[in-house]
Image 1: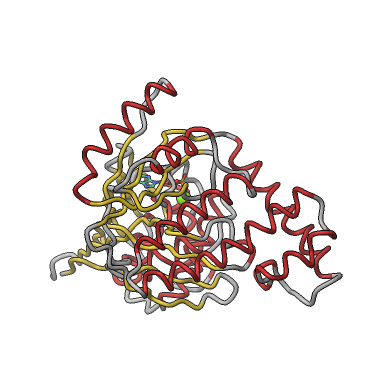
Image 2: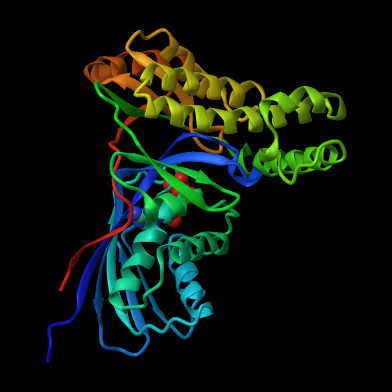
Length: 371
Ligand code: ADP
Ligand code: MG
């Protein structure tokens, strides 16, 4: 009898360098995979359909039969979501055991959920020789997240699979075409400051923003030949201003400028001009705070604090909004002293702590061990 087949799979969380609230408007985003991961180790257990998965971080075990999926709670729903996707697409698997844990902080906007999905699905793809191509796995993971109840775009799963060390992806969310952009931060690094705020507003306001964008698009279509808000150029804004109310104009203005910011940021990285990258981060934050209005006082405080630091080139809030992390482009030698300064000022102002998260850019989903 052969030794039981075992494999280890890992997939990363991500940052989004620029391009927020552009994804569901068929626009552009610039995410990058990071060196924080969810890691699964799988073993074939020789049963036809019984499985046992242990979450080390949650100190919890999920035992189920592949013929009776859908009973999972909390993290187990991501497992069900992926397994339903395999079933719906006709992929056959048998019983297995798995253990997993992660280093991506949960619920901080670094997409621990996508890293879980990508690591789990990529691991099963190898364990059972399913031959699913990466783009298909991206889409299956996105649908698994929808099963859990989050109608997310495709960015997080895309970068968790396709990311490459020291590169960002420039992803067109309308076509799923992407380019890898080399990122050389020289003497600088990306540092995350977690505001440790998670507002309950996030999902209701997210839906309102989506509706406002859809309504605005219908109005704009009457005067310009566009299919999506992302077909608009900055120079079109003057033409459409009168056909929208003030709120609609602000939201559309953000989407149009943010798409432009993504392309300009690519250009700045290509030129090795980190000062320009930093300015675009600040510009993106101003727009997301004042025009899209999804920031919060705590994140605005962090960004304003950064503006007074001479070794910081730029910063912006990252993600859906109303909390989560700020992304800061800072000289490496200043990281520790900056953390001291911001921590002290932040807790004096808000009576609770912010926390730093150290990251480097890393690779997408990989199989790290198999025998
Ligand atoms: P984010 O993706 O921004 O980290 P989400 O709320 O989308 O936040 O996903 C977090 C959820 O994903 C957790 O509540 C948990 O259910 C699941 N999850 C992610 N990583 C792990 C892990 N290492 N162990 C168990 N569950 C995890
Ligand atoms: Mg998530």
